[in-house]
Length: 315
Image 1 (cartoon, helix red, strand yellow):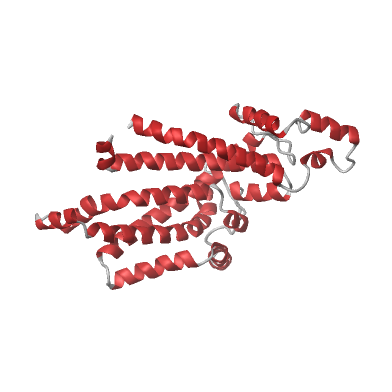
Image 2 (cartoon, rainbow, N blue to C red; image 1 turned 30 degrees about the vertical axis):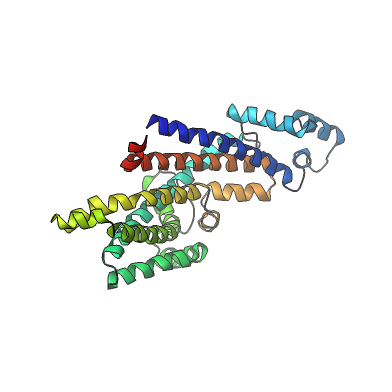
């Protein structure tokens, strides 16, 4: 397993390097001059010259990247032009919010999508199959922003069950935190549940036609054991990969959902940073998001290795 992990890590390192180059160059392609933003409305020539020297803007581009990468490797992602706070501090404030929302959305999607996909495959051609497909397609088709607005009107305005917007950390008030994140997590989880259901159904239908499943049934094993221990375990492999990709996308920030429910997560922060031309924050968020995405996929590869005996036998 260690050998497999190191091989995957060797692939991840150059990927992270290329991402860092892309993130740095992205700032240079954005319109506007951050130095002019920092100089304020007066834009005094001496102030501008001082800031350009301080932030090494007069150096060649390659040296600017090397200085920036050196700071990043030391944990310094720069300073926000708008608030004056370190970007690492801002990310430390917003990242737990997005992680909480992403975990809740994935829990909902997993508990709904995977069992529905298994039932749909086992009951192929029946009412339950058509119902599961209808619900899954509805979750994939309905836009998140429309579903979020409808939930606010129904659940918050008309029924008064949950708050329409805002956020509370689970450390201050766990019950209030659950109330404020329940609807946005449901909105995010519907589309993911639909995708998981469709992929689970497809994987299960493929596995149920394999010879080892027919052999297990011929041995007289109970159908429940055949489905769960033989079929579902092998169908789970592509589902793990899909779940990792979906979770990585959630960590990138659900921009529309966070805006609708006023959730102070990654999505809202990067939108505000782009509008305010806060380039250091944009760089930091994109870099952290890309790194998290790679690490999550690395974890998915390790789970794939653990669950797939053929990969272990090949090493």
